[in-house]
Length: 406
Image 1 (cartoon, one colour):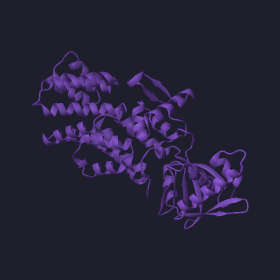
Image 2 (tube, rainbow, N blue to C red):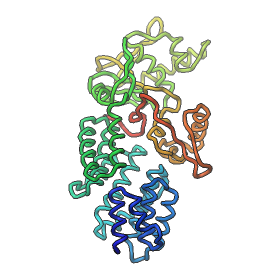
Image 3 (cartoon, rainbow, N blue to C red):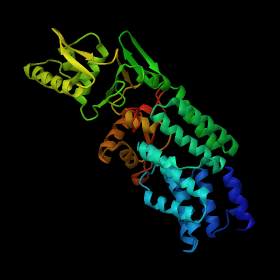
Image 4 (spheres, rainbow, N blue to C red):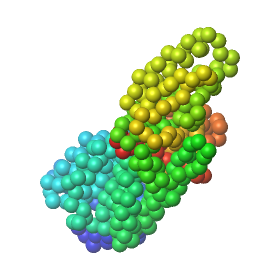
């Protein structure tokens, strides 16, 4: 490695892309192309960065396996930052294996962190945890220790392990400051702000207030029967019952939970579940059928009893019933939750992360754009969508991935 390449690499490692470009901007050999690509990525020109890295990978000969693998890892990181979740996970895994075999442990660890971050984005927390389990973070440089701690914090936040998340964020901040990379410190600060932002709205008899994530964790361990309108589940201390595919049943359950311990008139249940303004006998018959289905679904945690006016919820082991809902409720709340991270997402990546069809996501984006809630730039495959985070709106509970006891 010549002195200019060495100096440019050191500049990039400390977050100085302009310093790196001053040294290699006029060179077209493979190492210079790779460094120019990484510099352009740090400056935000991701499209140009991908072109330069692909040129560099082709320019490195077949015997330069490590250099080619580093280019693959760099391109995968660009894809992740630009929320292009369709990049080849197999190619990244192969590059990580090549780096590990040739003793480049630092870049191999970086590749593994990219795989973990991708799994976090699409809610595959168990796989992400397994990948983290074998890490020897003590041997990592400061920047990778920060990334490692951020991955631990991301999983802990999704699972509502707030003490673990706080400890990981403290370690991430310490490592980021040691690395001296401003972008990394900003990412740690952004993640930490989730802990101080309202997470859910608590709806219980006589109260309606906002809770932080640590309050939600305490609530889930309080012995209450929690009707979770973020995840569309109901849970007590030992059992979780999912209603993600049964919206009508969940609408009935939520109405009963908000009114507990009082009952809910049949007319109110018909309006909440079926949007029936003028109920007839067919609506009442359907309500009886759906209440029977709800009883069967809830039999492990609660019962639904008939009253002269309607129906009431009766928890079995729990002391009380509470409902938690997003601070800002919207038909497309989960979609807005992804876009609220401040990154520009392609619709294909949103469809993959949400587990929905591309057409469904595109229709939702069009409606949100018409309402002025999101905006896009680019056309065709280059189109990206983004929005500013809503005031008082946190995303953690709306993103995919299980909560405790799921």
